[in-house]
Image 1 (spheres, helix red, strand yellow):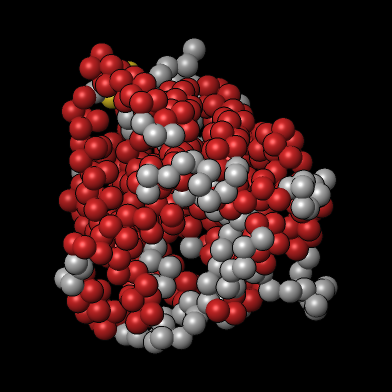
Image 2 (cartoon, helix red, strand yellow):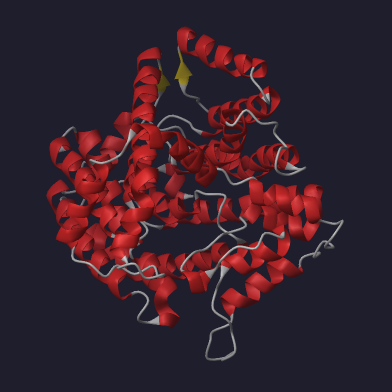
Length: 476
């Protein structure tokens, strides 16, 4: 029988009150529905001491759905002020999220209940020192691989998948620090280094380490009380404030990184990048933050393109009846040497076609993605979209089951593997081509790791070679 996160009475009352109070706001129903559904999803999905990666995916999707409503309210506009179908897109995306995660909720219930003690036993035979060494080495290897990924065009996706190895060791080290209550200060230092290092690339990957820390903490959660909710609210406010500052300076900072060129490659030294970041951060003016709120909410939300697509289909363009996803499948599975005329991937072209918006694209150094929820709608309409999302959820469930059972005989190590594998699928904004490309590359990479690398890793970090802990779940 599944066990759920314990919530005290104060917290339960607060969460219910917040949900109901949303109905009193402008566009209240379109805030109430996503919040209500995310409450239900998280309650059913996240169970004590089980992987938290899909809870993070649920939360990120929720933010990208709800941010569109927050943007309308901040501007004092009706939900459909700039498109006739944002309300439809909000409702369809919220319900679609339920279909996507339903198979994961089912499988999460199949994982035998765990406790802090049972997880601690899994890592008790691992050397925290050796795991730390592996993380440090992989940190530098990942930095090197990231710098050469685009040099080898045919292997770029595989190279980016190999970078995930670093995050496996990051998560494993974090689990060990919290479960053994050792070297926590060193882990906090690694978090800080990953965070600040993320600013030095064009794509500003500082968010990635934040997501992984959230995954780790959620996985070790067994109860939720008022104090914890208060801490989450405070941290959310701080992160939101940081987000406003970053939104304010991001354009100037990225322009500096590229030397003013319309590209996505960094052309300045790290020291200069740090100096510029400090200079820009110190010159943020309070009056410019209002524009930053609008820009940040607009950047987070991902229902506008969906809404514009609904506006045009099927009244202007017919449904594709599966051809859209089929083209994405063909693109991602056909090597360039078999098709020399294969075009370069440009997400903006599809977005322009289905939304009717004339965006700049790859040649101008920018990209506007449609998102994989709209991709499902393009092929099958609203109702067929739900079936397609459920099918994606089933595929996730199969992969989740395989990684959790087969990565190793150690459950906590496998937690780290599933976290590293699935994190990049946390957002609505991936279109079907990018989604399938990353999924196939990750599957190939992780199958290779499971067969040839992980056995060596487990042997290396295990202290007592004679003792091997295997749970009933992993033995099945």
